[in-house]
Length: 458
View 1 (tube, rainbow, N blue to C red):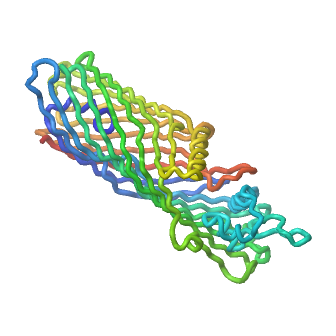
View 2: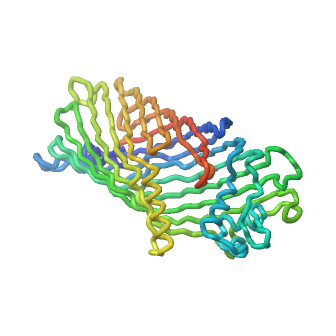
View 3: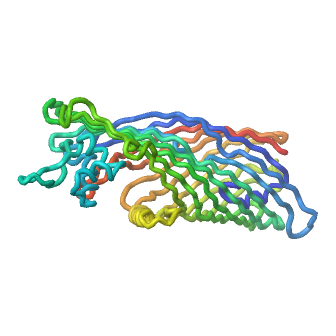
């Protein structure tokens, strides 16, 4: 916990510890899209904060009392999730994105429409989901989609994500006169994210003669990266029963590689030729995925902490009766940014636009955590909660967690069990259009995670 929240906490150690934290989570996702509710489930095993501390007192009677070194790994982000939602839309179609791409790029040559956009409108054009509009003189007048929202489209979206961010950290802590504690951590987060999305639109009328039965878009994104950041903290103990702490997290700078492919399958009831038509982006790119290399920088974080211990003689561990502790964290999410690694002009323009979008959509937020422990000799009872604020400017999203647990510590060995119940509220847009209202799916994810911490003195 000290390594990953406030490394100054390492300064309290005067002997070594080893701890391992396996966990198992059960997730349930509830979604509402266009007034249609759906749900999905997903279960995963993870390994949480695991590592060791090596510590010992110094021979200095004044000043530096002890030094501690620590190494640990921790799963700081879990991307394992399953989302499904569906609804009937009479106002817009996913396929209208392809029309926007062709119009915005002023594509007047059908050959360009068929080959220049292998991750979007070219696939739709070659499978006849998008077709040309001819003027009376036989020239190209524009483009049309075969998916007609006026008669109703049954829209379904399935998103499966796996992976996470695993932090590998090295830290050091110092104890100055049992009053001031300083610490620092250098961390190397390893990122792996995989998303498989399947979006489908079907004719809600079941009319076999309107040149549209369904189309389906499948996207595969695989992201890998490694980053580096620093965490620095200080804790002050004004009296034996109280501690006040401050921690600063530097931005994490990731070097990231994306591999992306997509495909479209259409059934247009004989339009453009009999049978079902399918085309993949790899058909137009010599079998290669779209590879993007870029740097991602996360925001700064600032954490203010406080704790208070109960008992008559706090210095004597056996006399401690419990404690209460709290963290308040500030994060400015709109400071996240992307940058091209190859200094390509086109890529720089894209990432500049993306960073502007982040600034327009995201905002700063305050996260808060509160916990307490009641100590019953070698047994402990714990209760806690956390609130993670809304990172968006115009949307509504937050995370609430409630935790209860039991602990046992005796003769240098400890075992902690906790159950964490999380309630996540978020939104997901299946697609975004420039000239029409966009409909979000409202997500409510409830999950329970059973966590066990097992450790012993070194």
